[in-house]
View 1 (cartoon, rainbow, N blue to C red):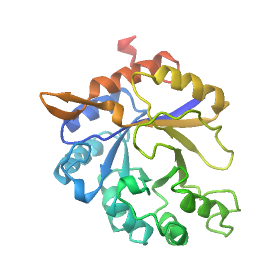
View 2: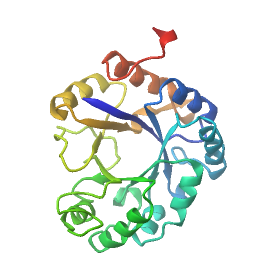
View 3: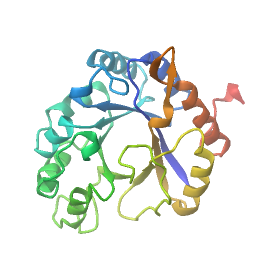
Length: 262
């Protein structure tokens, strides 16, 4: 199995962006995820715009080592599904390379018209080839991702395939942090990642289980809820927990610590 990225989502104002830069410099396979939902901006897990500006400054100085994913929720998803890609231009200027579309009710999205949004969303994807779009793959989002898979036109490719800059994150928990009972084998027609209840407490077993089903394919894993801690009565993003996961990944031989750490 090849692990293309180790996703740590929910970075926010509780952590110094420069510390994230240090982690990225030492471990360039780490991808930090920022949640964007306007009605929750400034709350735990949802960074303020001012903080993201600081993160963007660090990213610009990283010479490509810092990997950022924008996890869109609420109104930001609705905009994209309606064909409005203006915020995507902002994300590109900030240095984000991947955009996850969390099109679920728990993430504040109107899911009643997902099937009708397929072709509009496809136009956004085609208009922004520099970005990789990640779709949450679960039963609730099926009208969107299945709609893309069943399209058969020059832009989307043959039926059963996704556009080159679209991938899927298998997460039946819909971002609620519930561990999956099993992990599917990656398809041959598009890249996938795995999420749902993964964290420092079970990362070793999750890696062992995914290695079996991955069958040598390249995948990524993502986590969020398990990386939170209460420190000084504050809900914070905990880099110590991130390091616990990194260490297990390196010990598993999927990536390496910097040479000076042995």
